[in-house]
Amino acid sequence: MLVVVVLLVTVLMRVAIITAVAYLLLPRGSPCPHCGADMAAVRNRLFDRLLPVLQRRWCLECGWNGIVRRIRPAPSHHAARRPLIPS
Image 1 (spheres, one colour):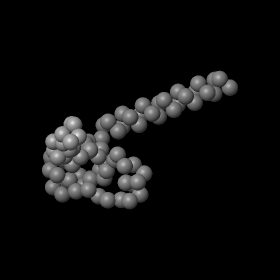
Image 2 (image 1 turned 90 degrees about the horizontal axis):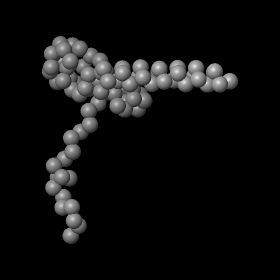
Image 3 (image 1 turned 120 degrees about the vertical axis):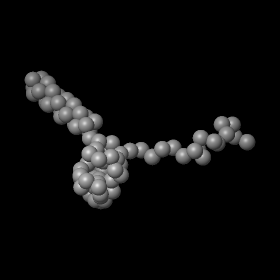
């Protein structure tokens, strides 16, 4: 039984490592990895709900389409200007 558990853990660790490396290899954001132009987002409800950290994009300039990592929006400047001590 112990051998089965050890083998199962090693397989799960392999899957986790491969998933992390594949995620880090994906291009990030809206610039096209080939030509650098801004890409248009391709909306798919099922894909967006299953994998919210990834996004489908299509380049209008060179025609490249693929999956990219979704970027986080920058914090607004209004939140940084709030006073630290409540009045």
